[in-house]
Length: 135
Image 1 (cartoon, rainbow, N blue to C red):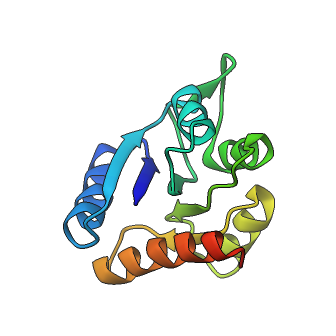
Image 2: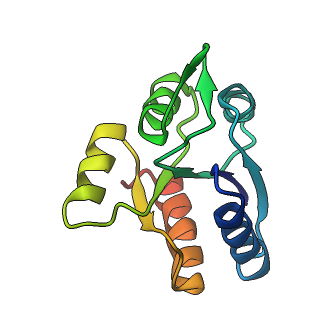
C-alpha cells in the first residue's frame, strides 16, 4: 500500500513514517507540495493520505493552504477518490468531527501518535473501506 503523509513537522512526519513502514510494512512518502500530491493522486499512485490539519509551510497558487482546505481540494479534484485521514492535535470533543465535516475527510487520528498499532490499523481500515465503497 502506498501512503502519503502531508506533515510540516519533521518529527511528526518521521514518527508516522517509521510506524507505517516498520509495523505496517507500507511504502510511505512524506511531502507538503499540493502539486506533487495532486499529480500522484491523478496517476493512481496513492492508496491513503494522512493529512496534517495545521500546515504552516504549504502553498497553492501563491497563497497558504491548510490541511482542511487541501483535503477539500483533493476531494473535489480527484477522478480517483483517495481516502484521507486528518492528523490533528486538535482532539477536543467535537473538533475532529467538525474538521472532518469541513474537509470531507474519511477519518482522523490524534497527534501525537500514542498507540502505533492502532494508527496502522486505522490507516489500513480507511484504505479497506474506501476500496469496498464504505465510508
